[in-house]
Length: 234
Figure 1: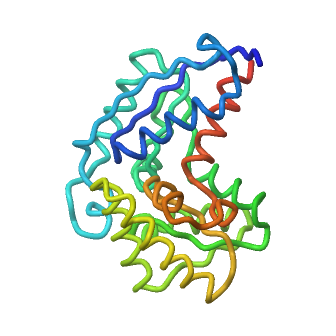
Figure 2 (figure 1 turned 180 degrees about the horizontal axis):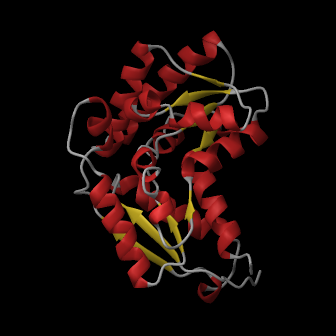
């Protein structure tokens, strides 16, 4: 299939590196083209030294907003015509300066809720970092779109944070085992898909052995939305 990409995508990655690599893999896999030349140009700035987003929200850690903003500005200066950040929690800070960016940003939270509405109109479980959950960024967007999101208990939230840490430390098998147990706990309470609203969580879910239809991936939602815009002539 021949398609012409119309926009250069700038990706601010490193939050974390494995999630960024998976996002780039999805862009290549989902482009639906047959030649190298039909894939989009992608500018990547991967900066794992950006301060921890969850720690800044709930633990008084260093503010990552300046580093995120500088990274996006750098991508603009390199020629990016569209921006994406494969990290959900980073968008808590991006929302503070989004209007100051010079090119459009594909917002992972907006796109993930849109995907969840299509996949499961009756609602879904939110699984995310403690920072994302406590910030309310997903519940506000769900409310704006008229969508029902259920939030896990504090104990399950602690398990999710553990799973995220396992992915970041390259312990995928363990993350998948813990993810399977955690999601089954949620499904025993109410059987609705999980919205993987941290970009490490789709990796853990894929390693869990659970049916893929039980998850809405924030990484997949972001990749889909980026490709739609990249290949659109307008």
